[in-house]
Length: 352
Image (cartoon, rainbow, N blue to C red; front, side):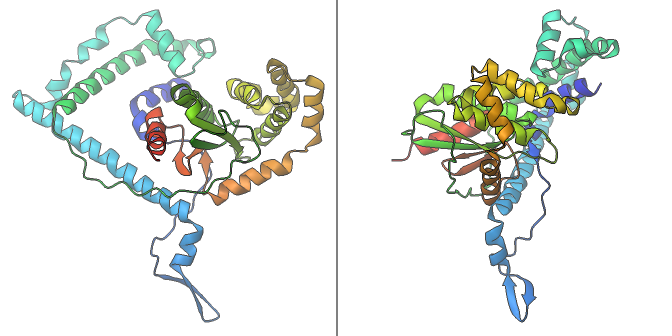
């Protein structure tokens, strides 16, 4: 039940994990700028000197602290709204929510099951009989959950809720765009630089977010792709980046970029590693590349230094997970909802 469990968990806890991504291990840091961290031959190493080197990591800690507090605040708000409504109706919270339990008795259609599996990228053919039999029950549970959440959302829309939490200030980075070709005109006012990993499943969602941004903003934005393959957990990611660089040589980076993300199954699994070059070549054919030139480029390793350079620069900007986007230098980590990007993009577009 691993795949189905993940699916229902995604539905129930999407708010809590919206910033998730493929991540490198992080080290906790101290935020005492005036403290003495060390003494070397009588010379003090000040906290500020250390913090200047880990500015982005400290910002990430502050951001995470804010998000944790905000989620907890939302939970308390929800609890208060429901308790107040129950009191108003002269009942209990349990009885208030009992009205949704009868939704479990409604039959589940084939269309509902298909939609449930599609939303979670679950191939029904790969499920065991036991897993297939459990899907209708999970769909019923989701019905109840969604009905309860809508009820709470309606209560909240009628209430006077004011946030008093202060969102931490986001630093801006002078992010180089690299050697790639942008999606969008070079004259666009907003520059988005994405650091990504072709083998990372979260980055596949990031690709979808890029499509949404282009659809909404068109020529107002230009998007650059840079590499940050997490080789320890994604053994084929670096080679996939090399393949994409070979596609760039032929002026078809974005076509091949889409092929790589749409067909991660062709190079993600360990047991196909020995055939990975052939699979990359198949994707090149699908992207209408010159097959012979692509194969020669892929075998040459000529783009290794270029990809390593991307990775080094990413670390300078504090990138430690994929995907990470920079909107005119403002970091957005993870394949967040389009609203998170729109907030940053609209703010930049509103500037003179």
